Length: 258
DNA sequence: ATGGTAGAGTGTCTA
Image (cartoon, rainbow, N blue to C red; front, side):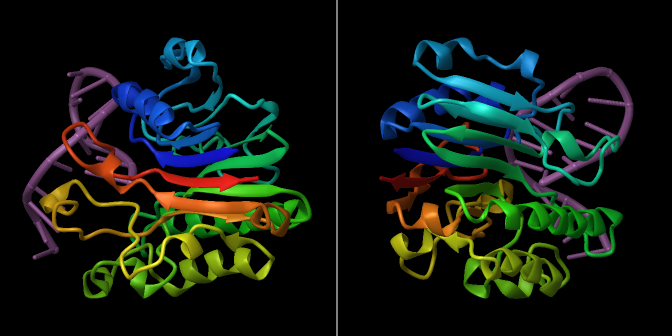
């Protein structure tokens, strides 16, 4: 079974690339972030004709996550227990969706950006991660994959130039500690062992031709519970998907499990 | 400190 995650930066504007990506890599389950659409706005007909089911959530024009699966899409849950921000327009219910696909519990996650370290949204980000961690410790016994845009670069090697992030989010010690807490609870970065080398970015800002100059960040991750990680045979970052006009600013991450 | 680009949709907001 092949599982992928992709911050698509608007599903409606990217639907052609999404369909081509699914076909090119023979993907069974695709977790999407920043769909930027309500469920009723989504162009699902093409995906359905390709044999996929879709579950989506999103209530505003900025966030939104979805799961696309052709190996089952059962027990769909929008959000997780204790998730902060209910009733907040920037927040909650459009950032997490979970379902059981092919025997694996998959969560598509769009971790809050944080904006600036002195912004209230940064506090909300850390709170959101803490609440997710609370429930994720209950899921670690089963075959679980926490996938998506974590908006954290856990290590210096995940950043093209640490000096440029001296006063920025994504690299602060509290954010990195929040990410590390998932690893300490048993979750494993299942991609890095299969993506060796110094530059394994998943995101390149649209500004300043950062993709062309390979000045990116690694912020999209597949964290697997031990039962999931033991089944991973291969993984890669589809860097080429970021090239050309009409690309998302994120590349998809693909994982194979037996 | 600012601005650069892209996408939501008309006012700016978000990333």
